[in-house]
Length: 262
Image (cartoon, rainbow, N blue to C red):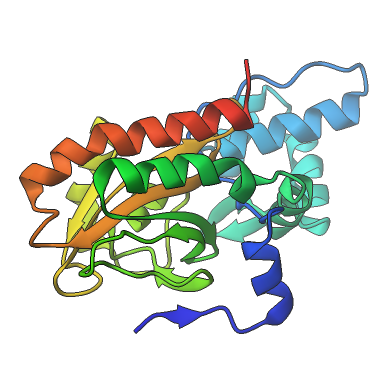
C-alpha cells in the first residue's frame, strides 16, 4: 500500500509540469567566482566548504582559508539566516537553501521534458516506467507510463514511497544526502549503484515486484530525479534487469540533454 501526498498544494506542485525538484549533492561543486563583494564571496566560500564535506569549525576555516574570527562571523551569520544549521556536532547546509533551490527549480518543466523518454522506455522494455523526485525522506512519483501487459506494476502519480526500499530510492541515496531511515542493510547495494550508474531491486518494497532505476542529473551534476522501469519479478529477474539497465540509463541521458543542453 502506497502513501500519497495529502496536502493539495504540495501534490499539485509535485505532479505539475513545473514539478518541484529537490537538489541533490554529488561532492563536485565547481569553485565559486570572486566578485569583489568580499562579504558575499566569503559567505559562499563557507557554504561551498560545507557542501563539499567540511563539518567542523576548524575544517571550514581550513577549507576556506579564512581567519578563525572571520570564519566564526560568517558561520554565525549564515546560521542566523538559515543557510547553515547545527547537525551531529558540526554544521550542515540549512533549510533556507532548500527553499531557495525549490523556488529556483520550480519553473523547470521536468515532467514535460521527461515524458517522451518515459514513454519510449515503456515501449522498449514492455514494462511500466516511472519518474520520481525526492521530497525530504520520501520519493514522489510525478509521472508514470503503464505497461500494456495484463500483469503489470502500477505506481500512482503522487505516490509517496520510502527511500530505503526500491531501486529509485537507492539512486537518491547513492547521489543525494542521507535519509533519516535505517538503510544500513542496503549500504552495499547503494555503493554498487554508485559504481555502475544504475540500481536494481527485487521484492524489496513490494513482494513480487522488481525494478531498475537510473539518475537524472542537472547542471553541475546535481541529482534532479530518478527514472525507473518496473514489473513482476517473474519477468524482471536479475538477468533481465541487466538487459534493461542500458535502456534505463539512456532514458535518463535523454532527459539530461533536454534539461542541460550543451
